[in-house]
Image 1: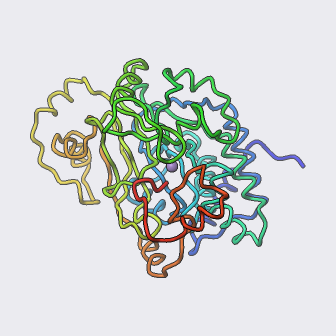
Image 2 (image 1 turned 90 degrees about the horizontal axis):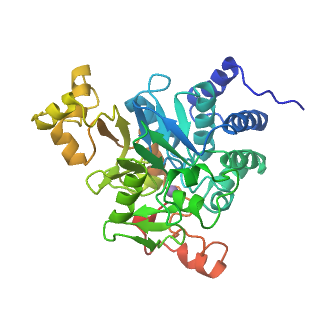
Image 3 (image 1 turned 90 degrees about the vertical axis):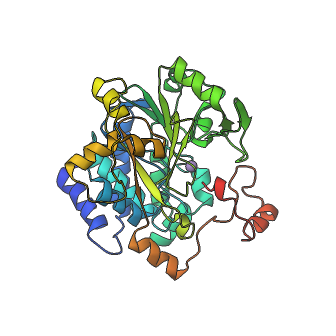
Length: 390
Ligand SMILES: [Mn+2]
């Protein structure tokens, strides 16, 4: 069988229509998934491990199969091709619509290759998806066949590991690695493989910032590291960066700023697992002209604007990026703005239906997987490690 290297726009639009215009969304047939994944793989083959992107761009954190909340992002934050998006990984597992979520993102990437960028999260992995919902969801939705799970997880091996924005911001799913001092070390990796248990590639998708420490410390997740202020300062200095943006950790307000904005967490799954009640956000980056005259002036102005309305005039839109108050409250740099949003109506419907979510009560880590005795107790709902939900 010959599989073409590009898919006609009309076919891609048909896929998008199947996913968007039906409620519940229609899943795509296995042959279509195969073709989409194969085509995107051939395109990602030439993508570098760290993509070089430019502002303006909106950065999105974990989605975890919350398909309707993903649509909410496009509704609130603008849709491609008018808005550029960088997704930081963890598209699948936990939520009920991992298949629809990853299908939509792949179709969008193929349809608007210069507008949508996808990097890899720790859940874009065969091991993790086998345990946290995606594999089971595929079996349920495709009549007991794991065929499309294989197509998707093979594609995951091709996803880039990070991105720079305007050459000044480094974005990855998790965090920094004690084995990596230079971005060039990441660029030199052979990324076309399953995520290993340790090393730079594992740490990039598993690590977390920790304001209590200065150096590195082993992560309670069982993979990756916690990294402190000295680590991020040195990494930024040595690589000529001003900031790291990452996802990977649930935030009640939808975002967290560490070290005066040197590191930001963006979390994009509202009411995570249909029960956490948290907000979500998208980080909009308008520019990175931290030193411009206009910017310095706006640093001293006392702009009084509120950012909690969804309907902003163009002037307000410009203002909110320059408002010192908003910036200070959110802990972001000039030209940045966390657009906070709440769960979609569909998310709440799923909540009221009280369905169970895969892996919700397990403290996810490598060491616990596959062990009946420990997983028996992990399934008990007594204690939830909210901080380390993945
Ligand atoms: Mn994660």
